[in-house]
Length: 116
Image 1 (cartoon, one colour):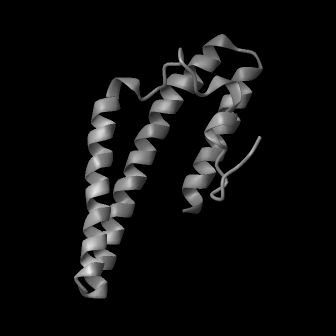
Image 2 (cartoon, rainbow, N blue to C red):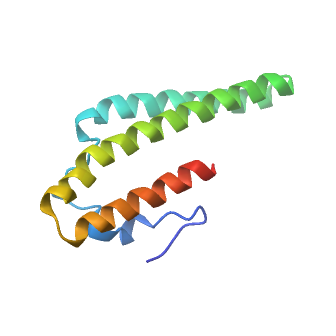
Image 3 (cartoon, one colour):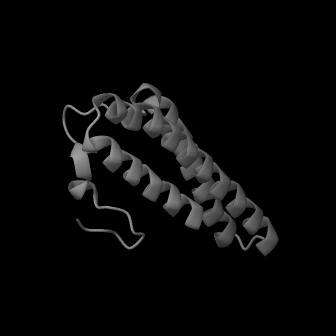
């Protein structure tokens, strides 16, 4: 298994069939809402670039960095909740070793979120 610089598993190497044609992810029902939210966050980041380009006061930029960071953290928390409710719960119903793997995967994701 390979990892990126941030320590995340590369998408092509996800355990337990985490990607694929017939896989339904926990966020699929809210996909449009998530994309809308991510576009809004993208706009915040572009706003930061514009602020730097326009030589805005440092503290004002830091305030916007904080808002963007909180928006990403909130998105991550919602995605994690959906993963637990869908993927981990599904593995629990199926039983076997898959539940242990899904719990470990979620635990590592939580660890990465806490380190940021």
